[in-house]
Image 1 (cartoon, rainbow, N blue to C red):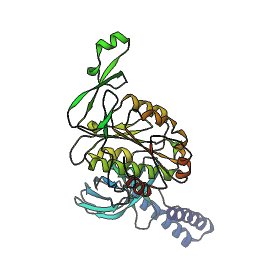
Image 2 (cartoon, rainbow, N blue to C red; image 1 turned 180 degrees about the vertical axis):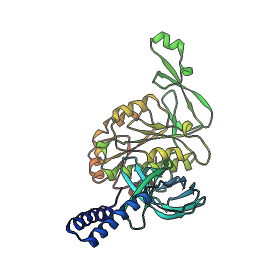
Image 3 (tube, one colour; image 1 turned 30 degrees about the horizontal axis):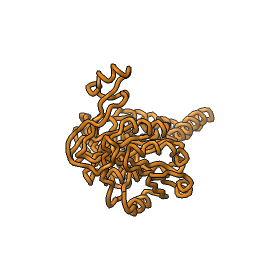
Image 4 (tube, one colour; image 1 turned 30 degrees about the vertical axis):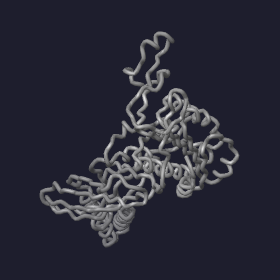
Length: 389
């Protein structure tokens, strides 16, 4: 496509050529013809398609918000003779469907050669970035015409939330079948109770004899008494947060998560919107925090009902400590949390955002540890100040 300069040169040249010819001014007509001819040559010059292949490397592909993330692009010329002068830009699409571009430094690429160029990606905000494809442009020396074409696939980058170090986490307690809460005893996987079937349960755990007697599917629930469990429930409802309070809530959840994994606890992460991740799904090893942090990076405001999420956790009790992280807008819907007190020995409710202290103080949550903070850093200080879990 002609640039603004190209459009101006073409229009002026056409006017001069026609006007000079009609008025009998050969010099003006010749000048106009030269301008139009220059535009035509530029169209041929820039319109010649680039011949190259593109490969992209991003290191690291997972980064904490605010840390540097560098991309390197290798462009290999497949042209036989000509030297290609190229400029380009990487397309960026965030999980919020926001589109932007990052300029790639100009490259002069001889035939058959490989040129590498690098640039920094904007990773200052938590989220997921789809980088690419690369838009490569050619332009004539006079800047009259610019032609662009895309190359390569897109690459995904996860920008993890910031976190703050917590000095300790609840080690958990196990509720015995007679209703007594004891400290966790090391042992093995044991039978805990029978409960109603929930979609997603393993059918191998169905207790068919009891199911036939009561007329509905009942499954055996087991508990590993050797592994204290902590369940994190993050309120991702749009109605519970401002844009800033959601980021602080995600950072607070990441802080609890990393502290629990450092203490070698088994962790489950649930979103009120429905997504979840358990320790078995996350896997083990040194990188076991990665799947959890990936899920937190993908958190976006959505729909959901807190009572529904609470009821699901009540039916699928798999923890000793429950930590709910919400925003100031979610403080008004915390009544259902009381249903978890007889299932989870320790229940912690954290409310973050402007006005969290006032809104939480107006709620009566007996038997629940409550923490209110303006941001995730203040939440960490209040968490460490809890004298006993």
